[in-house]
Amino acid sequence: MNETLLQGKFWLRPLGLLAGEAARMGVAAGMALPLAGGPQSFTHCEILARMPEGGVATALASIIELNRAACPRVESLLERLSKPRPDWAGRPLDRVSIMGIVNVTPDSFSDGGDFIDHDRAIAHGMALWSEGADLLDIGGESTRPGAMPVPEEEEIRRIEPVVRALAKAGAAVSIDTRRARVMEVAMAAGARVINDVSALADDPRSLATAAKAGAPLILMHRQGTSATMQRDPHYELASLDVLEALEARVEACAAAGIERDRILIDPGIGFGKHAAHNLEILARLGLLHGLGCGVMVGLSRKSLVGHLTQVVPPKERLPGSLAGGLFSVASGAQWLRVHDVAATRQVLLVWRAASFGA
Image (cartoon, rainbow, N blue to C red; front, side, top):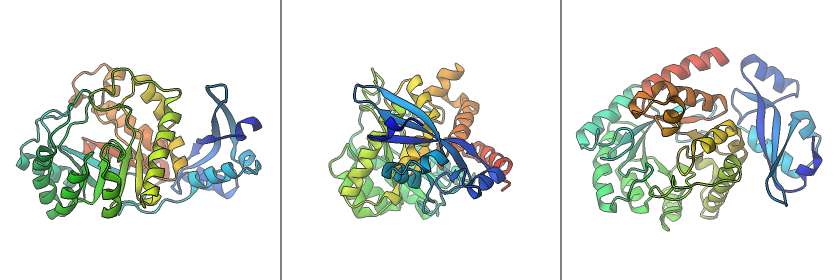
């Protein structure tokens, strides 16, 4: 193990993931730690540290070596990586849950215009709920690359009847918005969760609004704005840059009185990132568990899938979306945000039974 990397600020990425009986045996033997208190465990970590002269250095260490390091940051990170997460939005974080997407917009990248009519949006939400969605995410403003902002009152007009009807029918609803006023209207209409692509940064009232609401939150990483984010995104190391940007937003939430246990973090696949950035973030997805929050991934039908498969129509990207989602949960993600709930649920049921026997 390279001891010099442990002198400053560094991060740990879980490696050597085990499942089922192997995971239990590794923990019992002291060779592994549980990943986020779930059914997987990890035996090694990649150490990532920014160098004073610039760049990022990495090294590999086993759990035994790390436990012998007697370094307060090692101990803190290993605790965050391994400790059980409390339930979030009424769902356990020791298994995977599904968020179904309901876009009440004319211009979303995949289904823009399909559900701009309130009745059709409500029917679609109920269909996703019946297919096994654990949460329905209602959005009234497209956040696709190049999208322009929607007036606040128009966003409210789009989402309020849909949120109210789905919540009244018994569905668990989240509101996908950047605006404090829309959050307030949606919560009054029955939404339980706030999902903000700007991580509560776009609207100066959002932090106070979320703190007052007491609702579970999803903080997503985005570089730039929807209108500009894909023009020329730059990162030193995308996974580490995203992690530290989200760390800053989690700390901003803490300063506003929002507990860490209320937060899911989302690396924002496709939001201010080229394909190489997205792939590196996915490869090091386990880094995000170092923040001690649950992790959500949304890559359903996105351009990354199209780039890798050369499938242009977003609605024809289901196989690639399922593969990306399955890789994410195998890396420890606890929530997937998807368009195709039934297919995702089927894949997860088979994967969990084969991996863990349940």
